[in-house]
Image 1 (cartoon, rainbow, N blue to C red):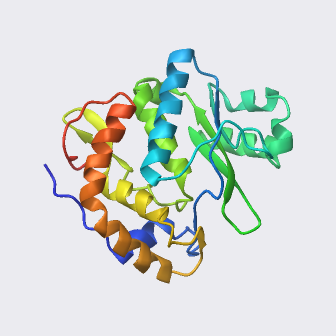
Image 2 (cartoon, rainbow, N blue to C red):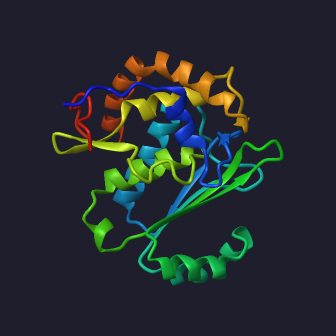
Length: 238
């Protein structure tokens, strides 16, 4: 079993430095109101449970409705990207939807997220798209739900998890990595800004996340129970 990874300034910079080289961090500036499309009742409860658990981990809030948007976290599950073109009014919410669908279809993409921001740069809304291809059909609903919840809670870099998933496997059970849990919790520390573009933010966030690592390990166990996973201890390297 691997040791828990140390959180450093470089760790944080990697998570929030985009492929363009720009450092950009943002967290939600308003309570999160999720709605899920394209799943059965049992899976719906699993997805919403994962969102609730990750929001609680962050110390953020949820609400019954957003006064401006109604729902500000929309998660779509479907079989073919073209199905998005049939969703009523989605083209009013996603600029250039048709071109986006063509591009993602050509790439064979299985997931994509679109964020919208308040004037100050905090996250205002997130649209998460999950195409259930043959590969994802083999993945438990709890794992997909947890991954979606983690990826929407802050604006991670577009390259953040290209080489290493935010999740890990522990004795056959998929869990959130404690160091990622610590970063999420530290990101919502009231003394930290909702938006940051200066890499010095990484140093401040790393210091706070490091202090939260022990608590994050227990939080990961609690989170796994919330989304239906077993309490299995710290994660092995994936």
